[in-house]
Amino acid sequence: MSEPSLKRLLDSVETIILVGASEKQHRDSYKIMAFLLERGYEVFPVNPRLAGGELMGRPVFASITQAADHIRNQLNKSVDMVDVFRDPAHLGEVAKEAIAAGVRILWGQLGVQNAAAEAEARQAGLTVVTNQCPKIILR
Image (tube, rainbow, N blue to C red; front, top):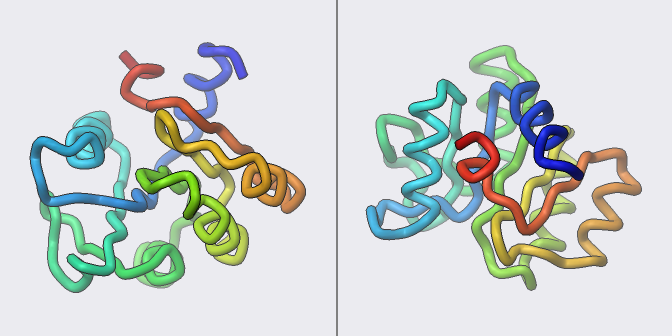
Protein backbone atom coordinates (compact mmCIF):
# COMPACT_ATOMS: atom_id res chain seq x y z
CA MET A 1 0.00 0.00 0.00
CA SER A 2 1.41 3.42 -0.94
CA GLU A 3 2.11 6.08 1.66
CA PRO A 4 -0.80 8.29 0.44
CA SER A 5 -3.12 5.25 0.68
CA LEU A 6 -1.89 4.54 4.21
CA LYS A 7 -2.50 8.17 5.17
CA ARG A 8 -6.06 7.99 3.79
CA LEU A 9 -6.59 4.76 5.73
CA LEU A 10 -5.41 6.41 8.96
CA ASP A 11 -7.63 9.42 8.22
CA SER A 12 -10.61 7.02 8.27
CA VAL A 13 -9.73 5.82 11.79
CA GLU A 14 -11.14 7.14 15.06
CA THR A 15 -10.64 4.29 17.56
CA ILE A 16 -7.41 2.32 17.98
CA ILE A 17 -6.75 -0.64 20.25
CA LEU A 18 -3.01 -0.63 20.94
CA VAL A 19 -1.78 -4.14 21.77
CA GLY A 20 1.47 -4.30 23.71
CA ALA A 21 1.07 -0.93 25.41
CA SER A 22 3.76 -0.01 27.91
CA GLU A 23 4.03 2.41 30.79
CA LYS A 24 7.78 2.72 30.11
CA GLN A 25 8.40 6.04 28.42
CA HIS A 26 11.44 4.81 26.45
CA ARG A 27 9.37 2.15 24.66
CA ASP A 28 8.09 2.76 21.15
CA SER A 29 4.59 1.65 22.13
CA TYR A 30 4.48 4.43 24.75
CA LYS A 31 5.77 7.04 22.31
CA ILE A 32 3.37 6.02 19.54
CA MET A 33 0.41 5.94 21.92
CA ALA A 34 1.26 9.49 23.04
CA PHE A 35 1.59 10.59 19.40
CA LEU A 36 -1.75 9.02 18.41
CA LEU A 37 -3.52 10.66 21.36
CA GLU A 38 -1.98 14.03 20.44
CA ARG A 39 -3.29 13.55 16.89
CA GLY A 40 -6.83 13.12 18.25
CA TYR A 41 -7.25 9.36 17.98
CA GLU A 42 -9.09 7.51 20.75
CA VAL A 43 -6.52 4.95 21.89
CA PHE A 44 -7.35 1.96 24.08
CA PRO A 45 -4.21 0.26 25.45
CA VAL A 46 -4.06 -3.51 25.91
CA ASN A 47 -1.60 -5.05 28.34
CA PRO A 48 -2.73 -7.86 30.68
CA ARG A 49 -0.12 -6.84 33.27
CA LEU A 50 -1.46 -3.27 33.46
CA ALA A 51 -5.17 -4.13 33.00
CA GLY A 52 -7.51 -2.29 35.33
CA GLY A 53 -5.19 0.69 35.60
CA GLU A 54 -4.71 3.72 33.43
CA LEU A 55 -2.08 4.78 30.93
CA MET A 56 -2.01 8.41 29.80
CA GLY A 57 -5.47 8.82 31.32
CA ARG A 58 -6.88 5.92 29.30
CA PRO A 59 -8.23 2.69 30.84
CA VAL A 60 -5.99 -0.33 30.17
CA PHE A 61 -7.59 -3.59 29.08
CA ALA A 62 -6.42 -7.20 29.34
CA SER A 63 -7.47 -8.12 25.80
CA ILE A 64 -8.69 -6.87 22.45
CA THR A 65 -12.08 -8.38 23.28
CA GLN A 66 -12.41 -6.35 26.49
CA ALA A 67 -11.31 -3.14 24.79
CA ALA A 68 -13.68 -3.72 21.85
CA ASP A 69 -16.59 -4.41 24.21
CA HIS A 70 -15.84 -1.14 26.03
CA ILE A 71 -15.67 0.83 22.76
CA ARG A 72 -18.95 -0.61 21.50
CA ASN A 73 -20.97 -0.79 24.70
CA GLN A 74 -19.73 2.22 26.66
CA LEU A 75 -18.92 4.61 23.82
CA ASN A 76 -21.28 3.29 21.14
CA LYS A 77 -18.50 3.41 18.54
CA SER A 78 -17.01 0.94 16.10
CA VAL A 79 -13.55 -0.56 16.51
CA ASP A 80 -11.50 0.79 13.64
CA MET A 81 -7.97 -0.51 14.15
CA VAL A 82 -5.73 -2.75 16.21
CA ASP A 83 -2.13 -1.49 16.30
CA VAL A 84 0.23 -4.31 17.28
CA PHE A 85 3.45 -3.94 19.27
CA ARG A 86 4.10 -7.65 19.85
CA ASP A 87 6.54 -10.25 18.64
CA PRO A 88 5.50 -11.43 15.15
CA ALA A 89 5.06 -14.94 16.57
CA HIS A 90 2.00 -13.61 18.46
CA LEU A 91 0.39 -11.93 15.44
CA GLY A 92 -1.69 -15.03 14.72
CA GLU A 93 -3.47 -14.95 18.08
CA VAL A 94 -3.85 -11.17 17.82
CA ALA A 95 -5.36 -11.52 14.33
CA LYS A 96 -7.84 -14.17 15.52
CA GLU A 97 -8.98 -11.94 18.38
CA ALA A 98 -9.21 -8.89 16.09
CA ILE A 99 -11.31 -10.87 13.61
CA ALA A 100 -13.64 -12.08 16.38
CA ALA A 101 -13.94 -8.52 17.73
CA GLY A 102 -15.01 -7.15 14.34
CA VAL A 103 -12.03 -4.87 13.89
CA ARG A 104 -11.69 -3.20 10.49
CA ILE A 105 -7.88 -2.78 10.27
CA LEU A 106 -5.02 -4.92 11.59
CA TRP A 107 -1.83 -2.84 11.72
CA GLY A 108 1.53 -4.42 12.56
CA GLN A 109 4.23 -1.99 13.64
CA LEU A 110 7.74 -2.00 12.18
CA GLY A 111 9.05 -5.56 12.27
CA VAL A 112 5.64 -7.07 13.06
CA GLN A 113 4.91 -9.38 10.13
CA ASN A 114 3.52 -12.90 9.96
CA ALA A 115 2.37 -14.15 6.55
CA ALA A 116 -0.09 -16.74 7.89
CA ALA A 117 -1.72 -14.28 10.30
CA GLU A 118 -1.91 -11.61 7.61
CA ALA A 119 -3.55 -14.02 5.17
CA GLU A 120 -6.09 -15.14 7.78
CA ALA A 121 -7.01 -11.54 8.59
CA ARG A 122 -7.33 -10.59 4.91
CA GLN A 123 -9.48 -13.64 4.24
CA ALA A 124 -11.77 -12.50 7.07
CA GLY A 125 -12.13 -9.11 5.38
CA LEU A 126 -9.75 -6.99 7.43
CA THR A 127 -7.46 -4.44 5.84
CA VAL A 128 -3.95 -5.52 6.84
CA VAL A 129 -0.91 -3.27 7.11
CA THR A 130 2.38 -4.61 8.45
CA ASN A 131 5.91 -3.33 8.99
CA GLN A 132 4.64 0.26 9.12
CA CYS A 133 4.39 2.96 11.78
CA PRO A 134 1.50 5.46 11.88
CA LYS A 135 3.84 8.18 13.18
CA ILE A 136 6.05 7.86 10.10
CA ILE A 137 3.02 7.91 7.78
CA LEU A 138 1.43 10.92 9.52
CA ARG A 139 4.60 12.99 9.92
